[in-house]
Image (cartoon, rainbow, N blue to C red):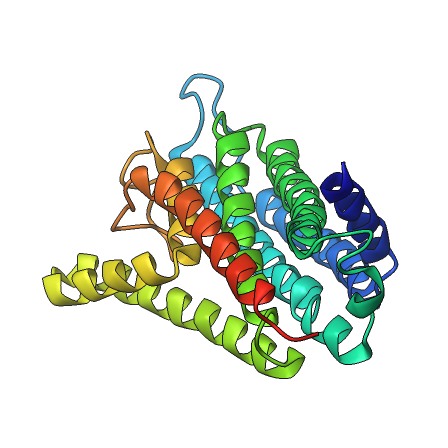
Length: 279
């Protein structure tokens, strides 16, 4: 199938991009620094009592370090999603590359959806594996592996796919630089509104909460990150959930369905725009 061939070609081509090489180096540095930080922190914690079970403080530290690491995964995945795809259509239109392959042997639909699938596969593997690695580092030093690490990691994958889809829509009608600015701007606005929603929940300000929810419907990327964090906090005591990464206003699980529909709508819109664009 031509679409899958395009996806495979996009995946292989992305592996040779400098941005991927740079992210690989930075990821290695991030994991090493994060592991060192966790080791230094847990080295100073008191030994767990054989009679008292797991220390609440130790559990709290494990949760906070997990949330810290997952925040890092969220940001790296978001930036990679944007920079991978920011010029995937616009740069090739400017270079005249698409004139050679469209309409033969590939249609515009094959090119657009194939590129999205290729980038989505790379992002899904990268974000999921990095999140599992973060959970493994904490579990190694704290002996506490979260049973919900897999669904929490998948929610971060969904976040990166939302931003990838926004970037793909933008590249069908915006120049590369402008698309990058818009995509990162939307990501920043979503993150700021998410913080506003959490703060509003803490101080019981319904207006702030409602504004945060409204913005999350326009750009549901941060809602996926907050849902991932709230999933990791589920079932923990109040003391264990105390810390700077606590989620006070938990997004609805229906936001996952909304995000999936949102991604599909963006891709349909991207196809409609791309089909009318002059090459």
